[in-house]
View 1 (tube, rainbow over the protein chains, first blue to last red):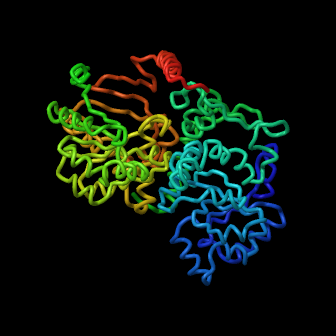
View 2: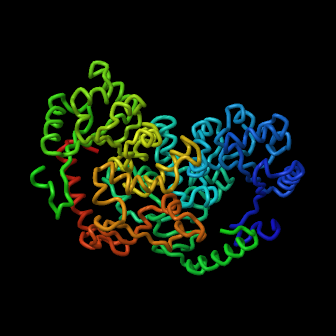
View 3: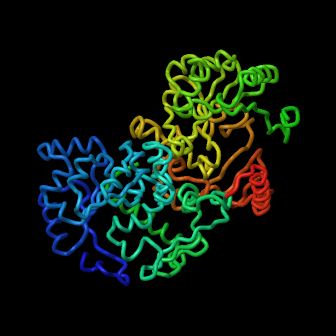
Length: 274
Length: 274
């Protein structure tokens, strides 16, 4: 699959190794992931330090070692390692990963819905760890709306660190320049400038939630007011993929039909009855 | 104004006394509010126990008394008293208001944005205090989207009390039956049944964020998936006020124009320059 997808779709598709999390992957699997990552240059994306119970279970299973110790022992800190969640990262962890290619994907809705906690984005910033924004799976965050996640990320840092701790601009960076750094794509996307891909979302400024006095700080307006409902156009590589809120090349009804078919098939194969 | 608006618009408008909060209202003002509330039967809506600094300032100003002690001394606990926020309500406060007509309006986005904290809805439930959902002012919550507030309310209780602590149905009740109780309107609105007003919001179930397996719990789908973007129709008293997402009787462009005019006038009068 890596050979098939790496660099496909005019270079837009990349391959990433995605072991789910420590508890569901064997030691040899992690060794294989490290070896493949270093040989092919593929990043490693996994979920870690999400919940307290999970961290306790890892210590139990791995002879008292926590997630970062385990990754260090497996040589994973030498790879381009991206951690979804990172709610329970400590200062000792951050000292240990410093200097490596290490980033965090913050998934605030999911971290609340599963009762995991609130990740400390300011601690990541201080440690120089780039932070992107994510939605985790649909079952954990339903809306899969990155604008909603950006808003929630900013709100949660404010209640954690005080109302001036995290600005609208800080929040938008999670989804743009800093998010691109978290993925190692900062030379290709994340800011609007010559030589980068024209990946743009155009918001409908005539919606009530984006209406404000002309003096209002535009970053705050977008970070705290926008949701995907305000997205008017989306350009990817300069091509219009969403126009006036509608997909230009995909048929939403067809996606629903196909999803329903796949879901029915999956439930049938699983043997679960309702 | 009370005489003019109480019972207007075919009984849909009611008058509520709305002193902002303890720190900006004099003792005689609160006395007048109590007297008027008891004489006319008008409820009292105010903001209280929102922020720690505010609570400290109240103690400083009112001879060591906290908000609930002060309200008790002013006779306000004898009125139909609704508190926006209530983040810092204690068990002692709840014991004190028990048996009165006392309710709380929960404003989760605002409580995060101002760094106030997370109100404990389960403590209100245990004390039998009805809780409604609110957005506070636009500057504190931007979207003024009650669906977004419902979702956030549920998510925050889960991170506070564990993932099973607050269901989608619990969350929807804040905006329906329990919200109606908080306003003393439980005999008129809040549930769909004969004899109540036909106040209904119809959601567009064909939106991606509301798509799910047929086995999914519908309350969870709405509580965690919906936002006002999913609202298709709104009926108030059986009359269609929003149809296919558009206001039927008001002109949005005209509202913007009038808002802009009023805002300009307000800024001019305030003498603030940008």
